[in-house]
Amino acid sequence: MTETQVTMTNSLGAFTGGSSRRGSASVTEAECKDGTTCSSTDLRKIINAREESHHMGAEVKKQDAATQMRPPDGGWGWLVVLGCVLIMTLSSLFGICFGVIFSRYLMEERSSSSTNAWIFNTMYCLWNMTGIFIRPLTSEFGWRKVGVFGGLLCSVSYVMSAFTPSPEFLFFSFSLLGGVGAGMMVTMCLVIVPLYFDKKRGVANAIMLGGMSFGQIVAPPVVRFLQDEFSFRGATMILGALVLHGCLGASFFHPIEWHLKKPTLQRESLPPEDEAPMISPKESKLCISEGLVNSQSPVAFAIRTDDLEADTMRARGGRPFVSETSSESRKSSSLCTSTLDLNDIETVTDADQRDEYHPDDEDPQKTSSSVCSVMFRVLRSTISDLGILRSPRACIIAVAKSLSLNAGLNFMMIVPFAMQAAGHTLDDSAWCISVLGMCSLLFRILVSSLSDCKRFNTRVCYVFGFALISFSTFIFPLLTDLTWLLATMALLGCGIGVNMGVANLVMIDVMGRKKFPTTFGASCFTGGVGFICLGPLLGVIRDTSNSYALSILVMASMQLTSFTLWLFMPAAIRYDERKTKEEDEENN
Image (cartoon, rainbow, N blue to C red; front, top):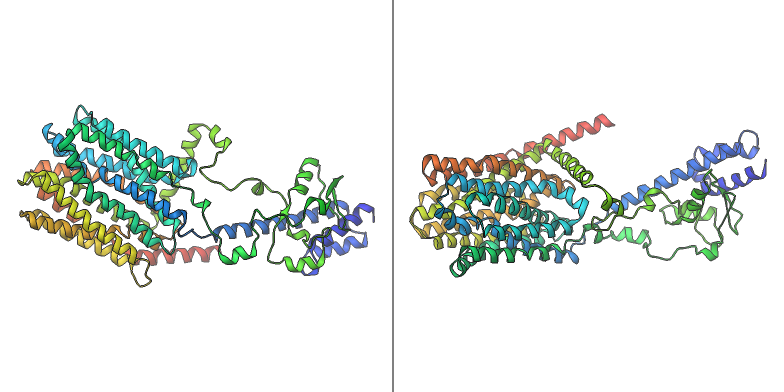
């Protein structure tokens, strides 16, 4: 045998790490030792194949470690919750306060119920449509940038609405700008909080939703006070300044990857990344000479290729990686004075050279990419996310949520108009909405906190909320006394709190944590379609029948339909499980 073949043969023996791990390569090695059937090219192929197999195993271990990472379940997550509480409190100014803020102005301008419904539902359509773009947008630009941009849009929306020359201008200033901005911020809050928590997810969700209910309590009286003191224009400008504080809340939205924790077992088996290398440059005295890595040990392995620069990078880029089988391999070979064997050294690959992706990190390639390229990636990812609606489970979740949101928000929008038409004052309607918010706050916190208990059934709680909402909406138009109206609104608030307190937790329970952002975005899309299709129809019913009661009864029927759809959820779950099992059998 030539000197080169001997060197390669020795390196192969060291690289394979003993007879227990040679496999099919051991026969070839034996033949090479005879010097009759093996050339240097064959040996190089064997070494490269063994090296590639080792790197693939290392990458699989890295991927497994990444999938086993768990949420921080506290720490920075509580600051994220604090930011979400601030945003949720301010978001109430775009929802249930629409009638309180604009009812007097719209009635003075003699705007029709259809126009009012179009303004309100267009805003919520864009609000929900924005939800389907949140995951792709945050992947491209990061959580904080998207959230701050949404806060700026909300503030500009109210400032421009203060100078509206006509009701039609509100389609741009309030519906377009406010809908997109509020949709960005609120959707991010609902998605990011469950990702930061595991065991304390229910408590964190309760605190976040408490911000929305708190806003429903304090916002209507505050708006009425500001309008009495500063008129419509002055009050609306002040609201624009208040909403700008949503940018402060969004500044806490770090990427979840920055705060993930390793399981206890994983931390014991893997050394920290900042730990000093097991082999220092002085101890190893590695050098590159004609494609061979030489050391004080007799072991030398040939990794020579036609590209000397690649060879150099491969030799210098290795870093220690402790594998589960490293204890055996250390017995068979050594490198210099270290007990680290060749199987424990990773070669620099493309995946190693790339830093872990964080949306908020600066990326020169990303910043230099064209706007069209970014938008294309966002659109492609959005269309891919809508494929989740092929699942019957996701379909029931999305359609039921769409009907319930359309009916509930249109009901709260129409309450000030209906009560003033029945002879009540605007202050009476504001107090009714505040009572609804107080009861909603109480039950959101209650059911969200109880959801951490093992015996608590979030699905039953969610469906029971639909029943309460439907019943209270049915009886509201049949009452005239203010006391009974307040009691009905309190019951409605309880139903909303029970339902919305576990709404996003139910998605995780039914669809799983990994599919939660996609399912949430798809449900927002169907909600947006519902607002643009069903919402204006309710205004047409009011104008045609000249009756607010009929419109409210139609809304109650929509809530009842949502309740009925969830009765089919067990069948949908069985169907998806059976379909998944059949696909697995076909693949096997």
